Length: 157
Image (cartoon, rainbow, N blue to C red):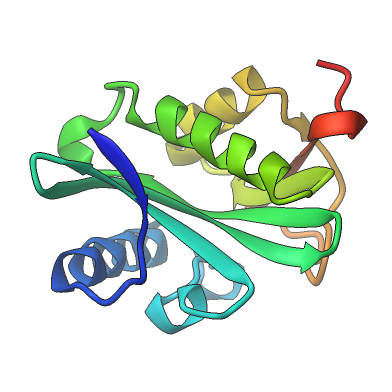
């Protein structure tokens, strides 16, 4: 299994992300959906990683630069067939290390409040994320949960 920076040009990652956006739309009301589409993930302030196993995309995640010291975790996803196999933990550890290497002092995220997102929230809690108020352009939303954690010199871990 490899974690690679992805330029989002391949058809497999496009299909993987399309499935992600469709799944989020089926669970979350449109006004509360914050998943970036392919064009949003290609923005210059986003770094995107794919997890590839045997030539097949089995996971993905990204960070979006909010400012010089703050990044947002975006588009964390594991293929349905590979959920609860350690891919998300491995990828999240990689992304946190890369965010720290890039000089970010904080990383925050928005995820759903629905029970569907409970495994994700538990994963983030295990990695030291704490619940917080909305950040960046987010507003309070009963369908959203916001979390943050310090990196590097800001971290007490």
